[in-house]
Image (cartoon, rainbow over all chains, first blue to last red; front, side, top):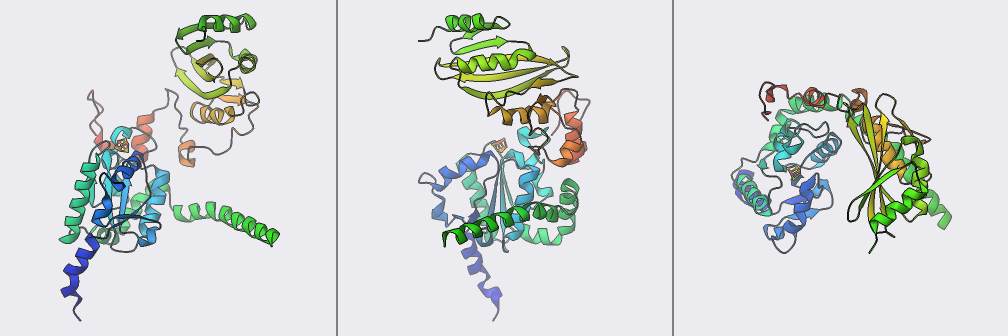
Length: 197
Length: 171
Ligand code: SF4
């Protein structure tokens, strides 16, 4: 069967069921509650905050990104299944915003992960966020939201930028730092359980 | 209503080594020398100043000093208090006040990391805190003689976007 025929229907379904990673980075996280609740009610577009990146389509980067969060953002982004879309809020993600001379905020987000829609402003009002989401839906419908393809095609370049900032092998280093801590926790939970039995 | 003048006078009577004044309603201020800081904060704590809100540092390169400001809050007297003390820049050592206000541990680590002030007696000063390793290696500091902008440019490779000759930066 030719799946091409079904493409418009699939795109329509994708556009109307964007699930968001609820990972609020930066100040913009505070704009999420009004968007989600009754005043601006995002759910009428089929958007929903969602418990795990494995089920998400849309990654909202809400504001400044520090190197520490950027590591988590990259890992979360790579955990999402294709197709995945990114909306970046605020001037901080475009050029550093008011943190242009801060040692701890990255200046250009799209050097590290691809971005579909930028929303300018500090902080963008919910209306402009809605506008951005509308734009995103349009782009999904006419097939121009292709950041996930760009990420695959230009992975070398993105990886080079990431490694320049964090040093090579940062993924392994991060994991090594946290795995013992998680294992300790597991062991402790096991002991508790034995005691309770 | 608290009489702030009377409150300051009462404290100063017990601590003749300090200077104090009322800035305005609900704001009072003391200046002391760094070697008496422990005595003074102990005295404050015994007199109903229950909370240490913050320890901040200000760098004054022209005076050759780092000014430490202990912000203490009193619920009893309904007032915010600044205790100011200045230590020399090149030998910034001051005794810890951790045992008086336990929360000081955190703020002392903060001031140590960003202003290299050494708080004698705080065992956790060298533990990892906010800065990441590469920042520490680069000697990052909020002291005024650290070239922060240069460091930012090097770290994020954004050299081309700034124009040094102009009065304003082009971003
Ligand atoms: S653009 Fe403004 S509101 Fe948004 S993260 Fe930056 S400083 Fe905060």
